[in-house]
Length: 290
Ligand SMILES: Nc1ncnc2c1ncn2[C@@H]1O[C@H](COP(=O)(O)OP(=O)(O)OP(=O)(O)O)[C@@H](O)[C@H]1O
Ligand SMILES: [Mg+2]
Image (cartoon, rainbow, N blue to C red; front, side, top):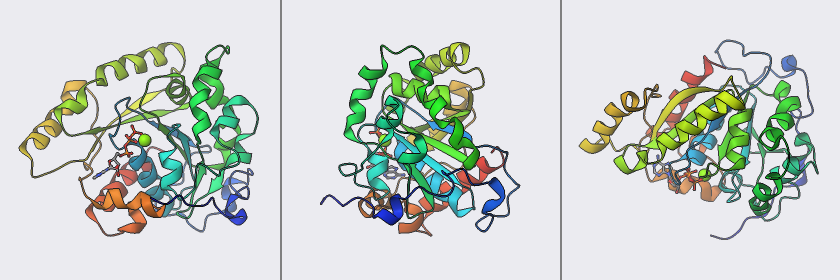
């Protein structure tokens, strides 16, 4: 795939929300849902297993919440920078990224870019790969993101954190900054491997770093409704982990693979598809809790 250029100056200018405009300043895109709380609810999407649709879910739920008029900030915490790329921002040309925020070289508001789908993004770049090593010797290393987000939270309704497939310092930062955790998980047996370890980590975080972290549940992804196995896994997964299962499951569909190539989520590349609608329904179920 040919690399795309970075966003124009117009789109990288500091967005109104990140500049800390008042909450009542922009009500034009509000949907019919109840008014949100005074500051953003931060939701981490995490699973140390790779390829379970964390990034796809962050982009799609973010776009769905923006459709509903919510002010949405997405944070790419993965050195692979797939979220950044899939929202049309070239990670190779971003001037400042989440890495600068975590090292203290930039304020979060100075790094935010506004994307086409009405969401703001804290982009990632490959230099984030060095952030783990850089953070490790620092005292309070798990709190860096939480502290950086503190000011921005007044300017958004929801912040979604896209985690990398690891349980390292960056994911611990996400779990420490988050009010809630959603665990994307494909409906197949092998995808369950490692969930116990993730939940053990969450329990440690709740004990030591972030007492307020709530697990909102498992988001079933890549669901093939024609497969008996997928249906059995879906029926069993909530009881197995004693967790809520978000509804509806996200169907497996080739349209998802196409969307990142044009820098948009499935909500605009295949507006009426079952996949887009499933993410809208999941986002609507989250709205009540924001
Ligand atoms: N519902 C779906 N149907 C079909 N393909 C999907 C679906 N959701 C995601 N995909 C595809 O699966 C692949 C992995 O998705 P994604 O990058 O969102 O996972 P991830 O958990 O963020 O991966 P990583 O752990 O590497 O960050 C991508 O190619 C994506 O386009
Ligand atoms: Mg990802």
